Length: 120
Image (cartoon, rainbow, N blue to C red; front, side, top):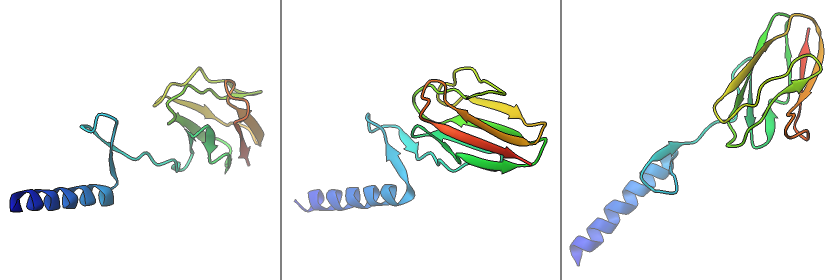
């Protein structure tokens, strides 16, 4: 009986450490999956939860923006000035803004996903 209590206590400690460390387990329970941040680094736009993050960004002329699809579904970027191919999860698209202006875009597959690049 004591061995069962000790084993249960050790298991609770291990699970508690995993919860604090931010590691999550998928459906199979065997492969750890780290959480994916939806925050973008400078000049990157994350596509996550059916939204662009950030959805408005201001950059200088000559900046290359990279969109990265973090969703499990396919997305694309469409503007009057540029169009991407369909982007599966993990794929990216880049565009260099060579002139000043405001460039509105959306996902051509999900038009309710707007975004805007302000180039100064």
